[in-house]
Image (tube, rainbow, N blue to C red; front, side):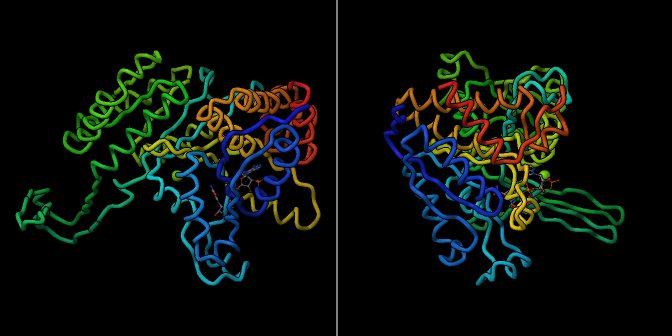
Length: 402
Ligand code: NAP
Ligand code: MG
């Protein structure tokens, strides 16, 4: 069989531990036999990042900007224990943080749906994608506890020295204070990324805040979202038959519990933190959750939502064939390849990505899976495999479908 050709490369960002091991197996068994794979390879393994003082991470981010599509393996964020374990020169920042800052991105998480892993919320038939604003609010706040009565004020001093002053509270006794902020530009980027994602995935976009109570702060989020939508996306949404829907956060939560899914739920930073864990756990498992970083300029980076699965890696190093779930990693690749296909206008590549995803889903739906899924499956698993045997099954199924 002739291999499927790629017109342009994707940026490939390799990583650490168990996910690095599986990354190589996925390429060998599921990609290289079928596709004439074109990638620009960047080794983001911890050792290499340390050796290059993170230069490699910045180069990888630049490659994603140049090629517009990247696929990333999970990576270790260093801490004191890793410093010792890997004999590092220094503690380096999170590579995801570096890439996010370079691409000005928003993170979208989407569960992979299979029929024998049931969401806890029975009406969810299609995935609910969560888009979390990852800047500001309570994550960059200034807080204070005061131990007696006094006047609390909010003061802004402009560049020209002019002051704006407001009384927060005449405090009658001890209490606590908190000041938070956000930036118009960051909210605009967030809104753009959500609308770009909605169009790209062909889903409606919901956004919610509490602007009835927080008229200025949340009101600004609502206003910017509406302005960005009206000026850049309204017509495209109409053409695609999609909707942008704004409501209050408590109303959104109530509606989410009764909807059948198939939406992008854009959340402010704190709402996104809380709601993404709810949606992830109610949808099944972390190993069945894809994650994509979308920049407002139209760059896409695909990855798995989970980490490097360290506990399994240590077992692997002792010679054990672990039953680590490779599904989210496989879907990171199919996501990147189908985006590449869309940008290049190469339908055979898009079809391959779609069929590989289909192969994964049908193997699991027939009852063959890794240990983590076997604990959740209904009807129960027929066959629990280690990662290597599971990937072999998917390879056979893919070959059969193709
Ligand atoms: P983790 O790698 O997500 O794993 C936590 C636990 O979740 C595992 O021990 C395993 O549970 C289960 N799990 C996660 N993925 C699985 C899979 N594919 N198949 C089966 N089980 C899976 O988180 P961590 O162990 O806390 O973090 C390890 C390293 O990953 C850290 O150094 C952290 O910095 C890094 N990290 C990277 C990213 C990223 O690059 N995007 C994200 C998060 C964490 P059992 O042990 O019960 O089987
Ligand atoms: Mg959290």
